[in-house]
Image (cartoon, rainbow, N blue to C red; front, side, top):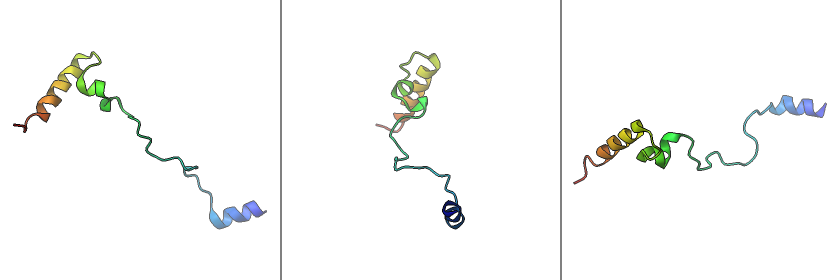
Length: 62
C-alpha cells in the first residue's frame, strides 16, 4: 500500500534514469564525419559536394 500511496503523491516518472550525460561527443550522422566532408570515401557525388563546400568556404577569403 505504501508504493501505491507514493505513486498517488508523486506520480510515475518515465524520463531518463541515471546520471549519464545527454551529449557524449559522438558523431551521429555520416554527413559530419571528416571523410564525407572531404569526399575521401570514394563516392563521386561526395567528391563533387566537397569541391562545392571548399569553393563556398573560400568565397570570401582574400
